[in-house]
Structures are given as C-alpha cells and as structure tokens.
Length: 401
Image (cartoon, one colour):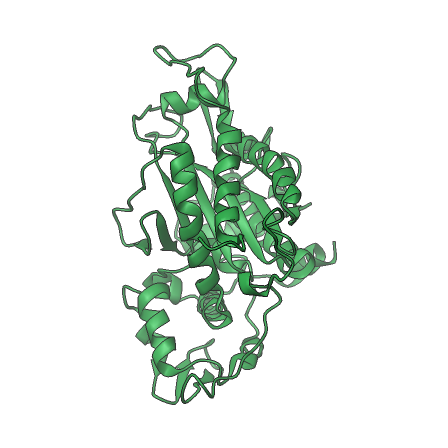
C-alpha cells in the first residue's frame, strides 16, 4: 500500500524529462556497481546485437575504448560507465537471481531443486477481460478470455514444477489485478497524455485512456514491484496466448494461422531509447547479464514446447523485434524490461483460430458455424503446461543433454 500512495503522490510524467508514461526518474547511481564489469567489446556487441540492433543508440550513448557516456535527463550530468580492460580483470558482481550452474541441489528426480520460478499469468480475467479487450466474443457472447486461460495454465503448471523441486510463486492467483488501484486513479495522467498527443479530451477518451494506463502500464509495473522487491525469483515465465488481427473493434475474424514464439528483452526502437527510463532499464539488463541466461533458457524451452504443441515458429514482419533463435525473438516489452531477473515470455497458440477455440472450449457447444471440436487432442491447457515443464526439465536437468 505504501508503494501505491507514493506513486500517486510523486509519479508525474514530465514531457521535458522524456520519460515513459507512469515511469519515475531513474536513479543512475544504481548502475555504479557494474563499473569495470564489462569490456568495451562485450558492451558494444550486446548493444548492437540484442538491445539496439537497428541502431539509434548513438544519439544517447557515446562509446570509447575506456567508457560509455550515457545521456540522462536534461540539465544533469551524463552517466559514465567504465569498462574493464579485458575479461580477466573484469569485476564480478553477484545477482540476486541464480543461474543453472549455481543450483547445486538438482538431481535426476528433482531437476528443478533450488530453483525459484515466478509464473506471470498474462492479462486479467473475469469481468476485467472485456476492458482489456483480450477476449473473443460472438454476438455479445464471450467465448474465451486470455487472462482466465493463462491463469488456468499457471495453476496446472505450478504443482508440476513444485513436484520437480522448484519453489513456485505467481504474480496473481485470481482473475483480478494485482494492484489495488483502479482506472479512476489514472484520470489526471490520462488527460495529460491526451493533451500531449494533441487528441480530443472527451469523457470517452479520458475513460479509455485511464483504463489503458491501468491494465496496460501500471498493472505490469506493479507486478514488477512484486517480483523485484518481494518475490525475487531466479526466473520469470510469462504465460500468454497469441492472436492474429481481428479487424476493427467489435468485429471478429477467424484465421487458419497457429504458431508459437518466445520473447526476451531487446530490440529497442529510436523512440524507446529517447526515454530516459528505458535507456536505464536497458543498461540494467545488459549489465546484469540476464540476457545470457534467458536466451539459453528460451531456446532450450522452445523445442519441447514446439514438439508438444506441434506449432510452427512465428515470424515478425517488422523491426519491432529481432530473431535470435528459431522460435526466440528479442523485443522490448514492459514485462521483459522491468523484471530484474531472466524473463522468458511465452506466446503459444492463436486464440482466433477455430481449432484452438474449440479446444479452449472443449465440452461446450461451439458458437461459430463450422467450428469443429477436436476430441482426440488433450486439454490445451495441460498441453501448454506439459510443454513448458519439459522445456524447464531439459534446461535444468543435471544429466547431459
């Protein structure tokens, strides 16, 4: 509750500070612990290869053989990161999370022993799903709600992982949001944002923007607060279902497409790098070394989940992401950026595929003509959980792979 009160009192986005909406000004001194921990070559390789692969960073970061100079906020000194001269002399800073090699309790029967996994069931369920527009409906009848589905997968997955030795926590255990704040608390932010964008400030626009700030921004920031300050896991697995374009709002469009992909943080755009908080968050992740563990984990998890589901890889057709594995992409999502540990973001199945809908609603009468059930298939939720479990076992098993 203290965090909520502090947010309402102090978190006011300033256009002159170039911050993301609802973001606080970062404390750059927190990065001082990473002084002399990385070489210039390593830093440049990660910047160009994962975090800003399409350029744009040189407007905000100047790299020399000895240091990187990073623009902070207007009127303030830049942050200087000093490089190690070589790998041998680089300082080592331990993280709060542990990598696979640090989990000494693992056995063949308990391959996840000592591992703390936080499951983040994406979106919201119940009555909140309509506000989020992460649901599919036909003739005003709701067919499926992503927030309910991801929670169902998480509740199937959690006991399986505990049986394998892991400590498992969830960011939410009900359809409701994790935060106690509601859309009305974001009304002033909504008005300011609409005015800044030159949009009409109408009651409808204010309400819609307030809702978006509530579920799309602050709810994720609040989950990050829970993960970073209280739970402090070794990894976070974000569970999601995907969807192809459904056309205009209120319409419904079926698709034959069905696919799978994983996301880790990276591929910041020019506009994202222009935000001081996002430059800070990017450097925090780069310097912490989270990328190394999450990329290995995501690639290891991809094949078992693909084999279990039979899903082909998804391909981004724009520069918002960069492929770093057959099923794995780097993309700058709020969750993958803010959670201060390795994060694997799973996007499985396409919700507006008729066969997927039928499996999600197995046992119920279809509400769409020609929608065929697939009784020979196992529960889609158990299948999802099974694939994720197999992937985690494959990565963390002490046996040679």
